[in-house]
Image (tube, each protein chain N blue to C red):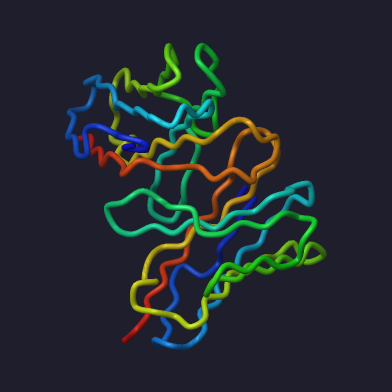
Length: 111
Length: 116
């Protein structure tokens, strides 16, 4: 029973274009969401987060949108760069010291 | 400031062998956790600790033991390795000061374990 779902295992985007990574969740009680980025042979690193009281959070080229009614969030990367090629994990924080991670989306930015 | 350090980076075990994956953090974080990453499964929580002397089970705890005798260290023990435990293991820590999830977790570089 996957509570956080990333239905696209992979995504390819041309350099300079927008990358949109999607994440769906099942529990409306989740109150905080995070995106982590992972390069091969490295641990995940924090990218951006959003609280359920907001619908948008922006940090440079990265913007996360939250649609609570649809239980959906998305990460937008504009413009995409080759260095953004990585696996991106969406995570939900249900308020019990635990993160619940999605299965990840592998982004490839083509030069 | 090294962050979260995991050792070893790679390990091959035979079925039935035991071993300990080491994790240390130097950020004085209260919260530490172990995850495993498997293809198509994302990161799954094995065990976690909210402070020295306090541990609890995560989503997939069977076959693993943990203890937390100090703030800095959180070792993960495999008592009798099985091929199903072949995975990449990540240790993470974060400050436990916030009630919410708005404190990011810092991850180690991972341990790639193969059980044959």
